[in-house]
Image (cartoon, rainbow, N blue to C red; front, top):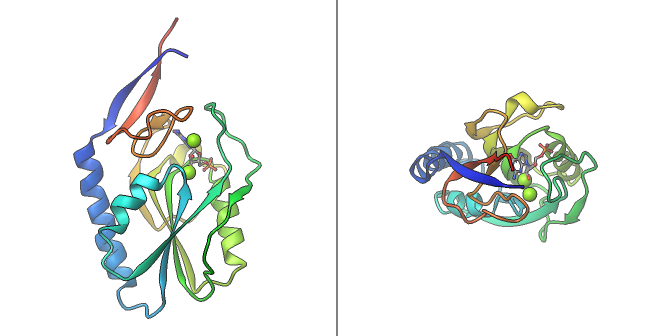
Length: 178
Ligand code: 5GP
Ligand code: MG
Ligand code: MG
């Protein structure tokens, strides 16, 4: 489909907000005494993770998993599956899930359930973007970068049919009439 991408959140604003999130996270986990592991959901979180983890001053591990959600279209798929699991054990650790965007909430609900079964010390959630008006199942979110309107966004790791992940800002996709 013919479309353009408009800047929605500038590179500067994204960077500044991630620094604020990191400050909160550092304060929260500084004296936990448990091991901290950042769990990124691939592929959308990879750039957010790269920026966030470099501002986290508490010692931590970085691990990734892949949960199926959207295909290459703009419609959602409620049948969430784990396509790639974590490489490391999380038992007894503080888990901080790092996500690109929370939409209906189905993906995170399922991921939380799966991780909870492994008996971590705690599970918290950090998302760069949140679309609260789209929520279908409630998800507790501990750290939110930006709450946004119901727009289809790309950039900063987030794709449209595998394009635009490299954009250094968050953009919105605007469909054009043929
Ligand atoms: P949920 O299970 O919360 O509906 O889906 C969350 C996932 O859907 C996100 O991690 C992301 O992969 C995808 N998603 C939700 N909204 C958007 C969007 O505006 N743009 C893109 N590219 N993906 C989105
Ligand atoms: Mg995602
Ligand atoms: Mg995608």
